[in-house]
Image (cartoon, rainbow, N blue to C red; front, side, top):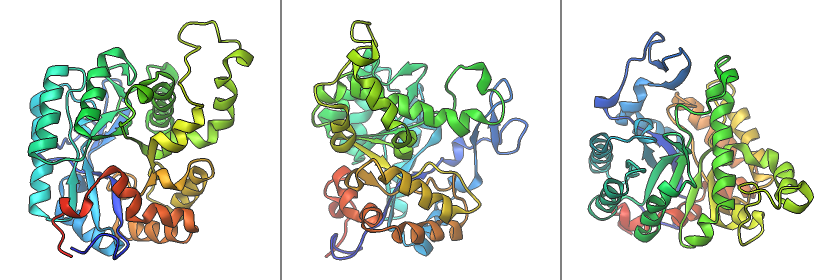
Length: 346
């Protein structure tokens, strides 16, 4: 370990791990899981359960620490499964000191169970954050049934990482061309971002910190349209219930000061450096680098060591804004006392 601030610290905020007990072989497509209608929704890459391989990749790419989340827990209603994931995350921290930080996984729609497990994860396991899907069992993230979850997160000082769920958007035309994963996941993230802002949740919980994956689903590309339609009077929705919601501050205030984003979201494995760099340029054109944390989406979007190495190098060549994303200073905004958590010795 090393003293934070003495050396540039690269933290990967979207690094996926699945305990061996929860790995699936898929139905009909090898490790690619299909739903009951034959649509692909999650790839169980064998690397997901291979933490020594993660560490070897991190060493090659210059990634110091990875924040772990588990796809089987993004929208998990079963407390026993959540506890298993959380315990395995904590074990990963113990087995590889200073290399991994776990996030909590909870049955978010059950206030009693979620609250108790969040408290255990924060106090007993020492996790700094929680992961939740951008839709929870068909409920949007601003649903009244999820208010206890958000309050518990804020009260415990845990940041919330929003990741798209495997299954979403019941639109029939998404049943071809892998559109759920290609476009549906990102659409879900954008919807969650806009709804959280307009619902007033961030006003109600001023201490709450939220990290939206994939640059908020690539929301920067749509901001001119979003900003225009946020003008309720001009867009004709000022008197329409549910369509006239407005937060206390201007919409961009929340984008620029209240939400955090990670720079994962493009998909490999070919031309990783070029695609990752272009995705970074698009995101930073509208969203401040001070609110963006580094992420690889390993081992899902990128699966080979050399691809991650190329991605890290490409980000480092994009100018001061992108280099700020690689700097550990942004990481510490979500994970306070990072050195202490990692038991580093100056």
